[in-house]
Each structure stands twice: as C-alpha cells, then as structure tokens.
Image (cartoon, rainbow, N blue to C red; front, side, top):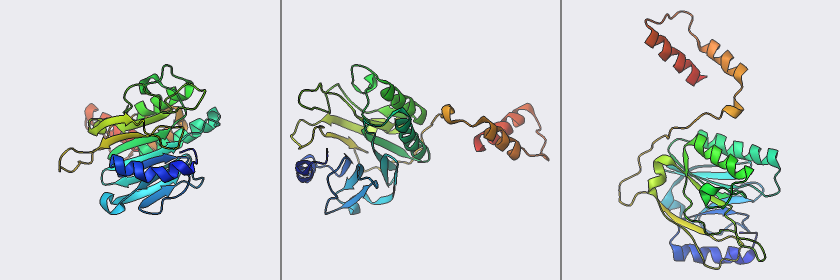
Length: 255
C-alpha cells in the first residue's frame, strides 16, 4: 500500500466491490477500525479480515518479515521482503517464513511482495532472490498461483515488474480460482491481486498435511547423527532386514 493515505481510504471500498473477505497487505498505512487485524511490530505486513465471526480465526502469529493467521484448515502467511535487504538478511527472512510454514499442518497460502523476479511467476527473467523463493516453494511442496505476465508493480518511468507472488500448497492449488491482477485505481504503486480460495460447494475442506522436502542447506549433520544414536534402542534386536530398515527410518524421521 506504500504507506498511502489514499490507498488506506480506498481499500474498504475495493474489498466491498470485489466481495473480498481477507486482505493480505504490505506497507499498510494504519490499522482498520473494524474486523480482525494483525500486523508485525514494524507495521510492514498485515492481514485484515473484515468479518472475524464469519472466518473464525483460530490462531495467528508474527515473525521477521511476515505475519500469519489460521482459519479452519487454511493458514495464510503475509510477507514483505524489502528491496534494501542484502543477501544474508533476505535469506534469513525467507528461512523464518519456511520454518513457520513447515510447522503448519493443513493447507497454506504464502502471499506478498517478495521484491524478486522469477519466470515461474510471470517475469521475463529469474534473479537470485527469485530462485531462492522457487527453491523454498519446492521444498515446502508449494505451487505458484500467479497467472499470466501482467505487471503488479507500476511506477512512472519504470518498467512494470511482478514482485507480488502467491504460493499455495499443491494439495490446495485446484481450489485457487480466478487469480487476477486488478486494473482499478487503488492509491498505490502496486496493483491488487484477487482470487477465490476454497470449495465451490458446501463441503468442508478436509485437513491434509502436504508432503514436504528437507531443507538440506540448514542440516547440522553432527546433531542429526547424535540424535539418531540417542534414539537407537539398545535392547531391541530387529527380527529381519525389513524391520531394521523400518526402525532406522523411524529414528531418522524422529531426529
């Protein structure tokens, strides 16, 4: 929202016209006066639910560069990675987001301004920051929900870019519909993105924990080996090779 008073005043009207229940925000101007709202300590990213009784927020939290909320089986993470972050700070924030997402069961949507470029998201090229995001998505089992190559950031005298990315659990990707970059004036240098999320009928979404991959770049081999040795039972002898493999894999997973 670029800390814009105009964007702040126009947001409720745009949400009403789009029949939007949730707003995932970056660089918000101020807290809204109604509904459920959460922002990080720096007021850089936020989530606003117009009617918290309708969505029934069951849990929420904040971290370095992100906030999150959970409603039923769906968790939404709003994030903002500033263009001024150096490589180390960018990766640290991304790691925090990944760690939080990895601990969440059910379906996940991660959305926000990543200030990066990735061809998978509609950009012409992929820069190092964009590649890190795509790598994180692969490890978490997330799919890119962006559709087309319409610019989401438009500043006078600058080429339009697509720094705003929507990632969604692969098990939930089919429930993201009508992903669209709005052309409406909103008072910001970013265009709003709208999409429908959830079932198309009255059936409740079943909680499913999506399969995720290990982030081997953060592996502490010494601690892993020590934990495996600690978990190894000294009194139980495997009855067969298959049993031994099952026991070993169980200890590795626990570690």
